[in-house]
Image (tube, rainbow, N blue to C red):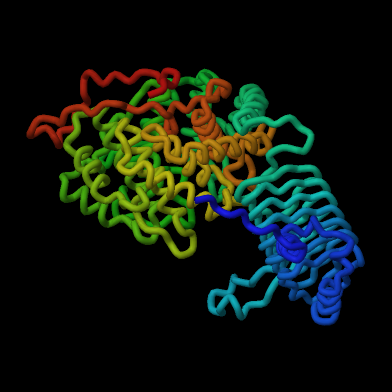
Length: 584
């Protein structure tokens, strides 16, 4: 049985279909649509009730939600159905606002601006700093948004108050824009960054990163010795720490050793024998920890009941231990503070501030793991390694892959940064897989997004190292979100040359003076980012100490019963100078 042909559409049906289509494709308007009584009535209504000034050749589709205090719609400009406009808006000639875009606040557009579906332009901001007052009752701030001529704002992009978008710029779909966008720039990402400029050849993120890394490699290779010389005062190194405090410290001496070792230039910092003797002399024999004599008279230094409560003495297990290994030496004494039986070690771990400060908890674990590494390599040790790894395996959060809790003020920042410290001294150091790599990658990326890729003083060596190292470590076990991780690494490498100060090195954070700590940490972070992109062969610095990427790769058998507390030096533990990094 044949199906009858549908009757031909009447002219009225054809016109009704065209009008329905026109609401969402208003660029198909005709002269008669502008002159139609329905459109004239719409314009008149908006003139009376929305403070609108709509030129004769502009078109407002039925279904456009216009609730402005003032609106100027220039010649040939169009508003599609579903577009939402509020506040004080001004459009030049031939602008278009597509369906379901939302514009509010104070926004000024030049000529030929294209705003795609789903875009959100917010030309005001809520106050929120007063914690005692609900946000909706705090005063608004309104810097406004300014958009130049010939700008394309892509689908679902977000443009925030205060943005200034230059002529000819392109905002990629899904980008979040704040601040200045240069003319002709193509920007994308969260937060948005310049990908290239219109008319330039398209280069991959890896290609751009390679160009930046090549230029930086030449500068650091030529100037690292100047950086060390600038901070050297006699036998000491005087530099700023992460908080900007300037003075001599054990860590500064160790950073100088690690920088020189990373460039295969230990001869540039003096006699190895003298350095070894000095570094070994910092060790406290009974505990095996390394308190800092330079800081003992600091006015803000608290009193500690025992050496293992001193975070500097714990950190210097890493700083001095690895500096000695860079020099082909080892500590004189075992790190007895970490040689505990299982109940005592578990009690120490469980007493750490996991809920309020997972970063500092992770720092203690880093020192414990490194102390056990040094004891295992150079002395006869007990069963602490098994206890430590067992405790960590049982306490990793299944949802986040991290240890510890997020905080109200900084979210996942402390657990993510703590993850780096924990795994650096344990899983990475001993070449063992982390418990939940996919969940960890999700957490690290979420933390990076939450802090908008880090800005201002938050764009510092700690936050970036603690992002790149976990991504590098977890991506050795899986390919989860690899493209996003590589994009972060590429962005870091593109931005790195702007942070190097000729002959002075890297500052720990934007706004600080260059320092040895900042230089060593940023060099190591850049090396890790380059490794993620398989570009590390370009860069002359290879971490040989704290931030080295090769693992011990072995676990020695436990000491026989009765020898756990003797801790005598293993006769076969002959330190060797660090060789070039080998890929695990």
